[in-house]
Image (cartoon, rainbow, N blue to C red; front, side, top):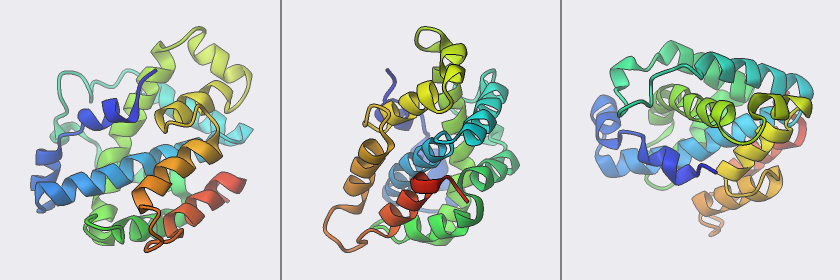
Length: 200
């Protein structure tokens, strides 16, 4: 089973820092906040049949992508596609997600997140697409048999919760938010809402 660390290791922090005009520490903090949140948003979408079907269609389009082959070249990332992905994943909450993420310690603010999420979204979707299409017995058919089942398990596994959205995502976000109460639940509440009833 692929892991979140495996995905994070493929993201070119130095290139992202240079593109966004921030130092590498800020870029690292921002990426480590944004990637689990994107995965959490995908998992939220996989919880209902229509969301899972839409997500599977998007994954099918990204399975043949070469974005992650032999190192990521940010020049190859389609940010317009990334904007669409972010919009589909978070719906009307996209700006709120960027704002909440940007407020985390060291994450660089909401304007940085607004630029970063569309850069990362195609990378995250391509990574998930390759795991979903090529990994595990039955591949796409097994996942399609029960909407959100195989796909939800894959996303939950990436988030460290074995496919149970409350646990894995909650644990990851608890770690991101530090448990110290300072950002107390802003992102957790927002994504909890996404996971509770889809995006709408």
